[in-house]
Amino acid sequence: MKIHEYQAKAIMAKYGIAVPKGGVASTPAEARQIAESLGGRAVVKAQVHAGGRGKAGGVKVVSSAQEAEQVAARLLGSNLVTHQTGPEGVPVRKVLVEETAAIAKELYLSLTVDAASRGAVVIASEAGGMEIEEVAARSPEKIMRLAPHPVLGLYAFQARKVAYALNLKPELVRPAGDLLMNLQRLFVENDCSLVEINPLVITQDNRLVALDGKINFDDDADFRHKEWEQLRDPEQEDPLERQAATFGVNYVRLDGDVGCLVNGAGLAMATMDMVGEVGARPANFLDVGGGADDEKIKQAFGIILGDPRVKKVLVNVFGGILRCDAVARGVIAACKETGKNPQIIVRLLGTNADEGRKILRESGLKVDLVDTLHEAAAKLR
Ligand code: GDP
Ligand code: MN
Picture: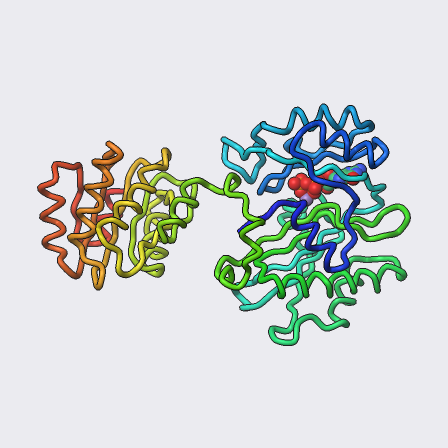
């Protein structure tokens, strides 16, 4: 789950991390008032669940409250398209209006989960700012990675090691170490999958300030974080993913055009690999789960058909508790309800597979029934 910058900064401030003074506005008049209270000069920032706002015109330094109002009027109600959003962009409903910082240097600092080492990892660079992706691609040696202890967390000496790697002036080494210790505590206590400060700036008067803040929470921990519900902004989420979540279907939207309906996460991953191997691109990951019935299959298939990018659909089901006749009925019901019937390639094995195939064959839909993954792959080429 993602949250907005202004929410992330409020959490960071609670952990003793310095953030600029300011407030969040939903109307141009509010933006003007906040800028006035800051003395006129301010930075106005679109609040969306996507990075790359600076390059997309979503971050503007203004020199008067009137200008803050104008920029807010332009941003609020618009859709911001950044390199991290789809072509349709994401709606801007709030702007953050903050005091400007006199920047001496922009650093990068984050903590995330590293699947390979099965733990948290600190990522830091003295080359922070909007070009961090290019730095990572072209000069990886400028990016340092360090793993906190999985149980004991970050040691103070490790935090200082990161601070030294950032080439800080001696008087900033201790504050930077403290900041990182606080950030690591925030990361663990809030069950985050990512906390990122980019840029973490050194101001001209030699202070460390989080000029940007990003926090993602690990959805699997939502049962013990009642406070997340108030932080959620469904408007920023992909509508199909939101719909899938309400149906209890594991669905992740991707950017290809082959919709995939599979049971079991492992089989779903293998199916996506197979789609990729023949040169096609999956439109989604979708695991309907073990005991899905007709209704759940219909909902899951409806989500796939709801994606306008989908040109073909691959159904790959190994029936166990999930019965293949239920899959067949669910697929047919979704096609009827949506009035859509793209090319559907179906491989059904296991419980009631023959019955499922018969139902599909007699449905009048365009369906390619195949027996093996190889045959399915051939249809995708
Ligand atoms: P992002 O592009 O979505 O990551 O948005 P950021 O919050 O990181 O802002 C992008 C860039 O705007 C930063 O890297 C800074 O260079 C610049 N910026 C943001 N706030 C200020 C500010 O208060 N003063 C100045 N001079 N630049 C700022
Ligand atoms: Mn940023």
